[in-house]
Length: 581
Image (cartoon, rainbow, N blue to C red; front, side, top):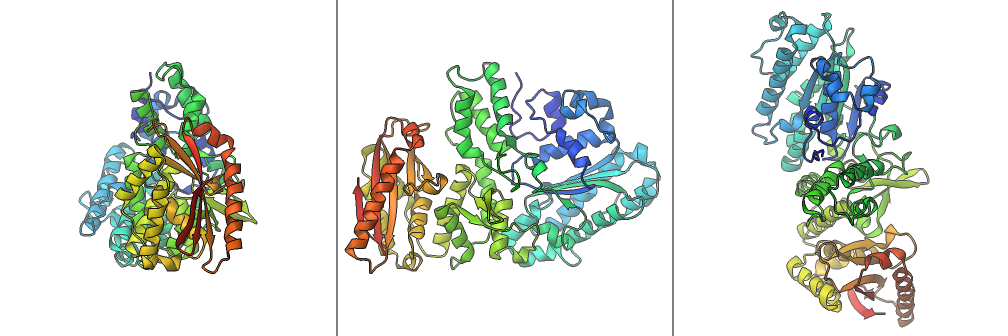
């Protein structure tokens, strides 16, 4: 039985050691029909490195003798292009560069020069010994070394170079998040080493007989490329083209095919169907879309999919933690990159709006410098590139972005709670709050949860100026409830059927003995609202609760729990009604 390649991005190893491989080789044909210098942005842990490793094995001359072994059974092996195994491949992975400020220059120089020296040694039989007369093997400046290499290649008849750069912005993003914009600017602007290096990359593609004939760069945002090249004007950004929506990650069909393979190998419990596993995974790992022209084609995060299946194959049940710790670590880095305004500024409010309302609209920016990344429209675009938001539709010609899945929602809840705390606006004892939620889940003591939360709203005066509408109260509640265990929260905006605010679906996969499930409707009245206004809100809440209680999803997922329908009415920051229907 094929092993799952969880955590492996070595394409030859996957093919030779008989790991399961989701064939993405058909995109090679499509890429060759594009301009020769390409740029692809995708979220972290989506399979970019494996894709570049496949390109290296396909195009590099030194893999020519292994073409059948590596590609024979794949699409491109059956439909090879003329360019296969015809290049010298120079591949950089900038995640290997140190992001510690005191070491970054030296690490960048040492790494780049090492990669280029190894490239020359590997292809010396094609380059000729004269290469060492032009390129100093002891060179420590990567800009100079690349300049010498491209000059030599461009005036000889040796094969051209296919340049691959993986995670081009990895260490610069870390510098930006850890040390701030000024230090980041020192490394990416003016006479900085990184800018000089990319200037030579550009030069390598532009002269007659250019040394670099093809180029493929991957990253998680367009910021660094905009900064080091004054806009990505050396290539074509294919990130949002509809034909490349599924170039990275797994489609639902690919996930089903993988699960079916292991089902046929009797590696899964006999009573578990493919449909059941897909339905388990979809809310957590699916629903990424990178092109407004591919709305029907939603992608699974490949790392998270493999994490789940790897655990399931070993244990015969869902993993205890549905979110891979590696994903949590990566999202933590992204949260620090998106600097939180100490005064809970407009961009923190953007996060709150997304959590409460489910979506925002924005014309996605294709490039912007780091100094403008906190501009609201750029900030929204950055959330899209990082995978925290995904395209859900189009409204009046503008893309609608929403939270793709539960994994991302958990990260946004964490972000929002951190923002409240850092801005000294609101801070709740999560440990105590979680214990109250457990009593709610097992003993039906729901009122103490919301009364405690309401008391905190009253006690912490700094929060009051932010409570100017129902969405804010709801946003606070969702953020904090989302960080407790026992329930999976499904806000109403996911259904768009005029239901109550959120369904607290019992997490029966991990806590099968939970006794209660809840649907909650939050209503907000202004401080001067009349008794008639309050009565009207209460009546409206009851109607929405009853409607949601009859929803097929609720009936299917509540299991044997007792479903309680809760109305909360806030008047200003005061909870004046908390009752069960």
